[in-house]
Length: 213
Length: 397
Image (cartoon, rainbow over all chains, first blue to last red; front, top):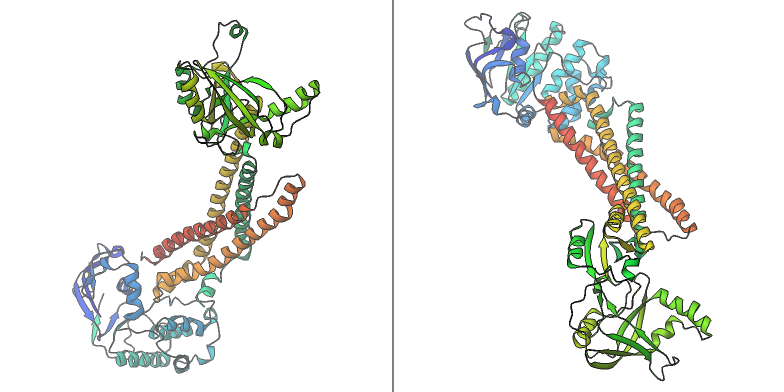
């Protein structure tokens, strides 16, 4: 999977001056299997960046080219196919179904492509320390627990690139490390890459590349 | 699991209202269709109330006519005026015999001896209101004759009684042959005729048109005769126009024909009102149901959007909606049809039969077809609306 950003400036940031190595208003290219960290303080547009790459925001100038094709040519159906088999996503607001249980949330995603069987999913939950929450509705979980559900959900599909928007913001160091390991394992196994946004921490990881805003 | 998620937030009360609305709307629609069909059924049960209205018109005979100062014949111009009227579908002048006609018994056929002067007229075959074998050619054994039913009544209940002779049944009259005496143009001939039927509507003695044309050629004076009576076929709702025409052309029209035109006009107006009401009701209940699905869509905005974000295709979400709506609306349709059938068989038919009107059951099929068509239209309208809404939710901001 390949992304190419050509002088993208989100509408809310119009008129601002950007650094020479910023992702905004520059020509930037990346793709699988690169592991990329996007480090910046809040309010600089990290979520905007991730949401633009995932096709959720279109309020920007400049051009985004995914797999050699400008995104203007992607219909809603093309985006859905991309999200189903190539591109996975952990949104900052997690976007879980709060009235459904943890397992229902995960099965709903897994049954699209039958990525894993249920026992592996339960293993993942146990590994991230929420094995006892399987039948609890997501709405009743803490933010940290919800984050871990969203992390697992993002892995329950084939992908070559994973977009993660501050996925560990509510996790302690120990749990972050466990989750990071799981993510690394799965992405390496699939030869996939990712972009991880973070509020200044590099989560004790080494990345192939760091992008700035 | 998908439909559980999408329909979880359904508000039961709103659901009940929307379903009840669609149910009442559809039942009202079916009721209207049912009534329209039944009314049409009554029309076809009685020939007088069905199809184009056949009316015999003639000009009024006035005192001036009697003194020979006024002519009751229809001129070519009159016919052209009639033909130009929108409400008149067909115009057919009566053809009259241009020669002397008399009838007498055929000896040995059981009729007493008699001789009477007569006249013949003919009308185009399409206008015949009696179903008889009306074919005639030169090889035919007899000339078919249709008499007005009133004529038989007059003989049996007037003439026969006063003269002290036996009454004659229609069957006897139809079994007996008659000798037809024709004279004119210096020629004289006898032929055999037979009464083949009786007309309710036409007070004339009718013979087949082709026979009369040939006879006129043979015995007639050769003068072109202007018809004194004209047959017109009018539209169902022509009562007003017919009355106006009567005034304008000083016409004399059979009272019962006018009454039939009046009834037909009223019936067609009522049917039109019912039809319009049915259409409005259907549109209203369609709107109600689209509103209902829109309600579910609005309540599930987050779910639909998120599903597309995690890779659910538009059609997968749409299918879930359509299956659910088809079940709900299918149940509504079936209940409406069921209730309508119950109303028809347990109430309307019983009511009609109690009043001596045979119940028509063709509308049951129509009821089903209407139900199915409404189902398809409802589901189709919802499909278009929901698909559009889902796609618009999936587009990024």
